[in-house]
Length: 107
Image (cartoon, rainbow, N blue to C red):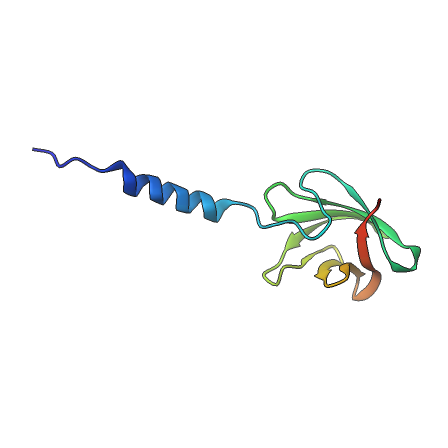
């Protein structure tokens, strides 16, 4: 005689896996799947697109474009760029120098 398996533990396990697989929230002002223009202090601008899966951000900036990979600290980095969420918006650095700060979506 077979013991019936309850579907409840399987459903709970599937929900847990699905919850872990969801993308982290986008950095302030970025939208998954589309480029957003950002205005920064000093009149600087750049564009960024948050990936649907939350693993990267694509930037188009003064020094070119690059795909930045998510780091454990919540920032994104790649090809000399670092994008960091800050209290006053986003900060974009290139090769260790701040290129733009206090960046928010263009109105």
